[in-house]
Structures are given as structure tokens and as C-alpha cells.
Image: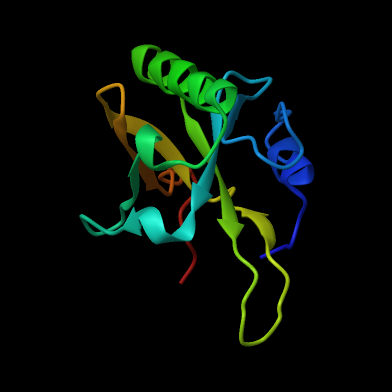
Length: 139
């Protein structure tokens, strides 16, 4: 886990947030949606699946930021685009540890549901390609 700025976290996936402090999403150079997630909205509905689920109406962000997120979710769902995760963690009151952002490059998501307000993104680890070898193992 790295403590990055929002700008640097989005940059790890080739995306540029419109605001250094308040962006919730951006489109990466490779076409993936990069989304800024809050820790409290994660669940594990199935083994191997990390779900991020919340509502646009629950986000405390400006109208332009919410409109961009809505457009990005619509584009990702319609185009079956991959979703990449940036996670926001808040400053801890007890320890004084600063908040920041980290990325999860090991997980790739898909928009599972978006009704214009509520959305769900399911993140999984991609299956490693099985490489078959023509050589036999020695005993």
C-alpha cells in the first residue's frame, strides 16, 4: 500500500483527475474507468469478489464531479470497459496518521449495476493465463 496523492493514484492507471482533491472518476488512456472508492462501501458478496456499492446521491461532491461520474459509469457499463480502483482512506483520529490514496492494480472491475443513482462494481483478480508447455517434467 502506498500513500499517494489523488493525482498520482489516478496517474498509476494512466488517468488524470479533473480536480487534484475531489475527483471521483476519470477515463484512462487505455479506455478503463478509474474510480475513487471510499473504504466504507466495500463488501464481499461472493468468494473472490470485492464489490463497491454506493449511490451518486450519497456522495458529497460538486455537481460537475457527480455528472462526470455518472457519464463514466454509463460509458463503462455500455462498453463493458474495465474499472480500476483508487481507494481513499481518511485521516485516523486516534493515531493521527494522515489520510491519502492507494491503488489496487491487482483487481479489475466491471460495472455490475447502474440505475442512474445506485451503482455496483465487482472487482476480481484476473485469472492467470495457463501456459501449456510441450516439454515433460523430469522426475
